[in-house]
Length: 280
Image 1 (cartoon, helix red, strand yellow):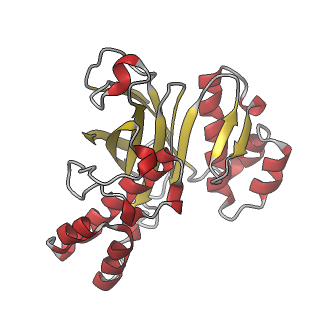
Image 2 (tube, rainbow, N blue to C red; image 1 turned 120 degrees about the vertical axis):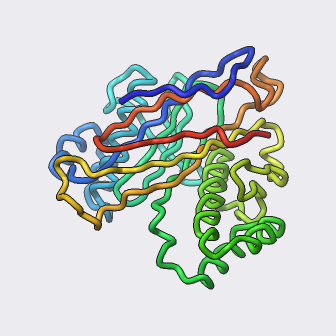
């Protein structure tokens, strides 16, 4: 399934962002074939990886996405890790991407445009068994002072979803920034509401115009799955962060610049919603 979502209209369109949602569920039999597109070092590393099915399917899907952008065979792409451990493609043509996976579901965003990209996806059920005290402790670790004040006004039944939404937005943003969790989440204010409040950003982020897109993924039972299998995680929440360089590419200087997301669902039984939730 392919779907395109256009977030407003600008003077100059950046290259579209490809968003791929995929699942590793029940794909163990494909692993030998998928490993054939890996480098020798990747085969050695991923064959022994804890949670091998998820890891192999994720890297193979990444290679297929990059292959479509770079117009080359998946096995011919060189992928290396940068100083922060983030994978990068070594290629003549510029390509930016970000990868996430949780439980059996993963997501990849990629573009050849001059954009900074970050994505995070989390299973909603991850926080359900947490006690109220555990949720509050995690909130103190990752929220700014103002965000914690807002968090404390919420009902207990609202706090888990608000925390998870804040976590995914910050994780996606810090991936796009390129620092990951080496920048403490509590130093980044993005807000907890439906419309983000990007009032406190690290110095490296100041030269960019930022957009946050909220992501909701629902996996309904496919025909091949056992009916009523409650052990399979179904509901996922995430975020996409997009950075546009200010004043460097003509009409892309403002956060209102057009963002086109082309969605591919690479597995049956998924419903995906992408919401343009805010900008700065």
